[in-house]
Length: 310
Image (cartoon, rainbow, N blue to C red; front, top):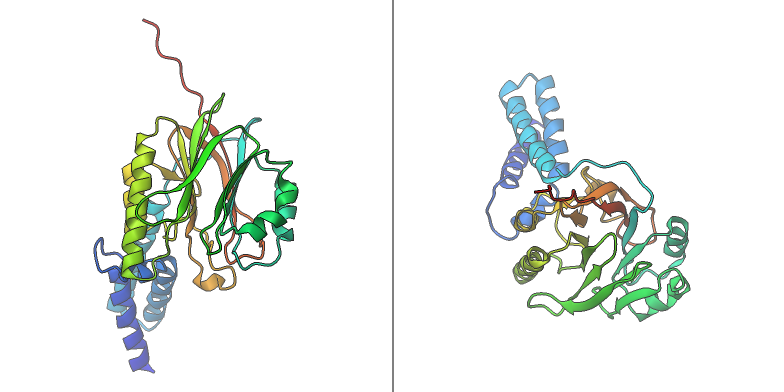
């Protein structure tokens, strides 16, 4: 039994140290996704070795867990939430899961929340037909259904100019929408490739970089939302945030995938906002039959102070 605990401890030390490394092979991201779970395990082993009065091991795991929690905290930092006001914009972002046969849960929730904007990921023509009863609620729509898991739609109650196109080298659609009026802003709805092999990791990274370049070039306040297939503390997402100066709308850890295995849940669905957008809340929605939890975000464009008189 002692040997098993010892080998488990060494394995956790190695994995826990690797996930903190700023560089490494592409497959290292698989471990880095589960940083929150690894931090919890580090705490458990710290307590275990403290009870056994093995202070060197206990101290090592305390330091390791503290470093992991520090990285989690740093990756989730964003602007403080503001108080709700009339006129705030409500956004639902939902990965519906193409193979999910039941649209009723999503229909009911959308009707209940009555959002201004609705991002739908993994939609095909069947899903769009099932959600057609919502057309009266969202007169402005941009649809790009696909038979694979990369269909995407953006529906809005607010007048918008929107187009769907692929950004980067892979023909996977994203949607760029511009909203004018009193609250002018731009929205990118995205769903990059999952990191299942080296080529897909590199493609996802380049796609996020290309999206970042468009964000930087945009003169309006920007919101980026969708299933980004990476976690808040991943190297690529931290580089994306540094490139764009965007911040997470949700500043506490939450698992968004997979719904059926909460102990192994990771946060890969995101809403990122520029400094000119004030966030009221960003909450996880109900179970809609998908393998992802949806997100409900309330935000507004910050009032700009008039320039000083000369």
